[in-house]
Image (cartoon, rainbow, N blue to C red):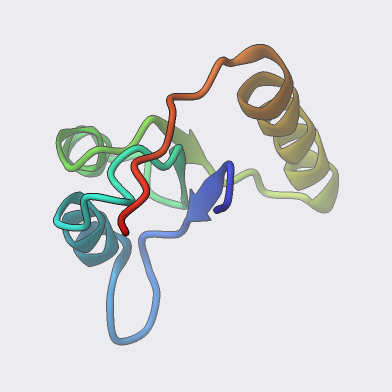
Length: 91
């Protein structure tokens, strides 16, 4: 089971909002830690992502070093500092 999911909103065939809706319908996946990583800074997108179960929303940086910095901070917080929930495992 992954400990952290980085989810882009703009993907082919199924966008990130559709993925969040699908995840909420999967009892064994509802507690996944999901960070949306998007180029959109629109309040509408941020609010909808949280309404659909995202735990965090990060606007994509404009440089490789910016990505490295964000990935490092996400790793530190979500995988080192944060205490995750127990996962529901189906039989």
